Amino acid sequence: MRGAEESGLSVVAGPAEALPGWVTSDPSLAEVVVSEEQIRRRTQELGAQISADYQGRPPLLVGVLKGAFMFMSDLARVIQLPVEVDFMAVASYGSSTRTSGVVRIVKDLDTDLAGRHVLVVEDIIDSGLTLAFLLRNLAARHPASLAVCALLAKDVGVAGPELAYVGFRIPPDFVVGYGLDLAERYRNLPCVRRYAGDPMP
Ligand code: IMP
Ligand code: MG
Image (cartoon, rainbow, N blue to C red; front, side, top):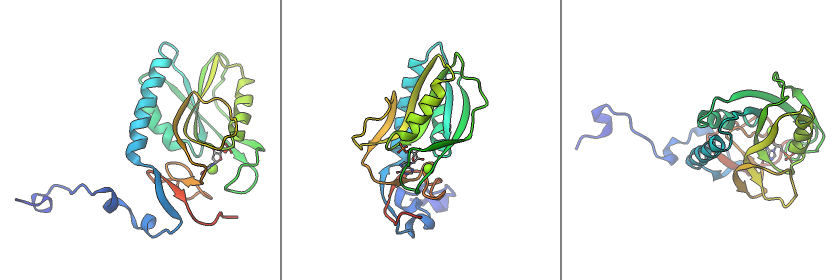
């Protein structure tokens, strides 16, 4: 039988082989919490659900930078409605692995929210403080409706704002990848992994 190399076809590497050196050689990157395939499937489901729920009233997707950039891009592609997208950037004061709850808007939206069906797209809900601030701020702009789609929500037992759409509920460990960072690193990992290193200052 002719091998793939011989036939000139490219070899599709298995997950282990596909891991680049910068991932395998980083001792801070622990186990995969949510795989690429799980993200792909769940995003497809969320897209279908959102498409059904917002039939006849296409939402404005509001991505929260920077963490949500990858999820936003994948989610927008699987919503079968003429959505619009906009972004805002928030920064919370305090250390890099804990939220202080004091949030400031670094980049505001370009879009007027009055009368719009707004769907906030978030990377991860931890304490819920960032989201609570955002929702208060956005609600004051008189949208017709306001809901949240978060890729990840940590099971911290803290009553956060109600989430209409959640990708995955995960344990309360610090995770990186698929948009999520530690000090701006790891955002380009295609999956979500537990971060096992020291928290950076
Ligand atoms: P919260 O205000 O505690 O809900 O924190 C939400 C924000 O903190 C997220 O939008 C992330 O930017 C960041 N964050 C919380 N947990 C993690 C994590 O495990 N990895 C990376 N960023 C996180
Ligand atoms: Mg962050």
